[in-house]
Image 1 (cartoon, one colour):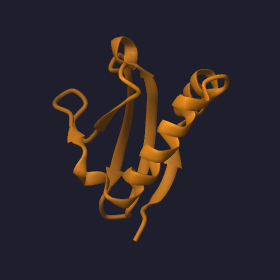
Image 2 (tube, one colour; image 1 turned 45 degrees about the horizontal axis):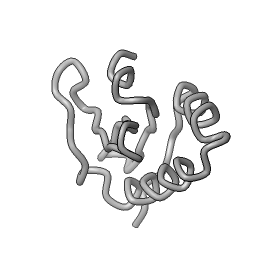
Image 3 (cartoon, one colour; image 1 turned 90 degrees about the horizontal axis):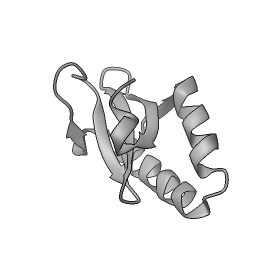
Image 4 (cartoon, helix red, strand yellow; image 1 turned 120 degrees about the vertical axis):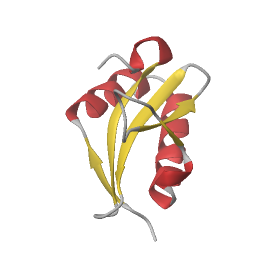
Length: 89
């Protein structure tokens, strides 16, 4: 059973900016989001100060940050960015 999906405005902006002209990255993100919706607790949890957030690497240098809400069975996509800037939101 798939989890519901919520998207932050920052993720929408990142997705449009990074995937607008990069079809390979767009396919990788879309595929990974579908995997996240199937089992979001499978991916790596982060430590303080980002406790509760999980991450997955995409296409080498990009990171997708998301937050699963187990009680509501909802996943919130937080950020899609290059590894060097992803954790500084």
